[in-house]
Image 1 (cartoon, rainbow, N blue to C red):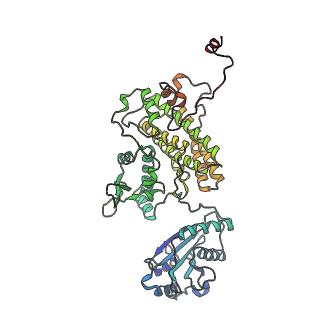
Image 2: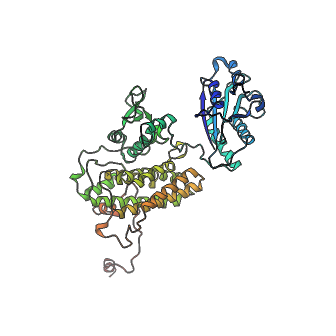
Image 3: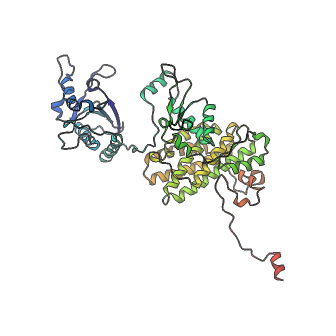
Length: 524
């Protein structure tokens, strides 16, 4: 069951809509199922012409507002619409009345047995939904508090679902991205857009955040993608940027100005403070040299040392060998994160959440680098599974940092033609195993919406990974070495080289079966 809240200034207009005809002019079977009095007393009578006389009901609802006077809310009409899913059974009037009374009791506007509560009515507007209308003024002259109404309504809807066996819906945890308004959807349809501007801007911001190394790089990449960017500076320190807003050049208001969307209007984790948590705390200045001045070995060695800090040169195109090495290392990073999630799935949930959050960056980078439409759909579907509940930023972990580092490395490779089918299938297989581990974590923590999103992503990845002949089972030949192996060749202690910010454990010590020649000489 879904509950949608709204506020208004005049109750008369809302009542005319509820008891009036539908969009095609046909009369509705709208009737009151519950209220501050019995439904029979509150039901509007019909006039000789067939229309409802709504004036007595409007007068009764507005009477408590006069007691508040200047202390009234600017929008005193509280409006809640409750809708069941299409596959849910049809509820009776008695069931809807009980749901409405429980909802008003839960939000605190009309507690059960309180004669001085607000005045309200519940109108059954159609077979599958009702509208609850309340005036934010108590009969005893007090003004009710409604700042927690959205969360309480969501909790009430979930309680009704459990009681009546209705279709399950997600809790109020701010993991879902804000949806488009009705005006945005209608305008997108009129203009022939394939998606609404909010979704387009969200994708551009997520792609730029995934492959950017610094805040400055993030804004530069947004500008290069054709997005308009506006900074919001601090009032105390005008030189400090505390927020941002983005807009599409071809999406403007009636006055001709761009329609701006702040980071919080796109997603809970796309505000500037949350984005800063993705990037390294301190990054050295980036050289202006291009990758074309470096050899393959020097580039790989530099990318390994600089991946954790996100320092790259952006004006060059890697070679085919670099592409293959980078994508193989991306698959190994996904496998490493899978092992970490399986290990920490019970003992350290915060560590798992960081890996889940960082996986979104890797998905965006892979989709952008390969241009594969199925991977693009997988990145969009994973959006719900990536976001931490209530906007909390999990602590950084080795698995998360390795995934973010690979996302930045793939950002360098996003200008080429991408890997071959074999390597892409291997990467998709590794990502599918990672997503399956994330799905198991969400199942264990009973986060059904995130688990459902992970299942959808897994189906998309299975489509890409149908070719299972990706990595040979034989030892890796010299020309098939990964980026880490090639870069570590010139380092004195390759076993302890940090790969994408994660120290690698040295090989285990094994005793020799017989003394060495030098040892025998010393003994003799």
